[in-house]
Amino acid sequence: MPTFMCFLNWTDQGAKTVKDAVKRYEQTKGLVAKLGGKMLGAYVTTGQYDVALTVEMPNGDAMAKLVIAITTSGNARTTTVRAFPPEEFSRLAAEAP
Image 1 (tube, rainbow, N blue to C red):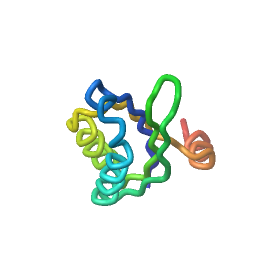
Image 2: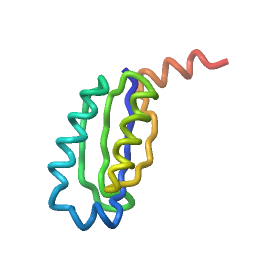
Image 3: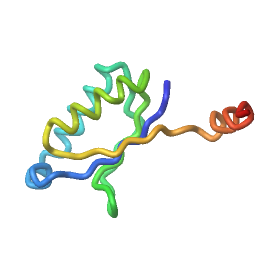
Image 4: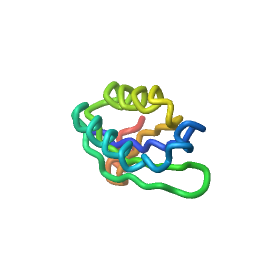
């Protein structure tokens, strides 16, 4: 399954309800599973982003559905990137024309 990193910034609404962050994490973890994925890691961070998630999802469509659900909750905005383990990237680089 492809791995994705999803960086979240809390909206004003999300910041006001920060005490519900663990509840929101559990909901997101359940949604990841419902979409056929696996939560690999979740961290509240300092710096540019408030939260960083690492998830395995069946495909980009499933990841898009997760991001849409997070965004439409009104609690966070997201930036999502596809992540490649070094071995997978090495294979892709070797196969590049």
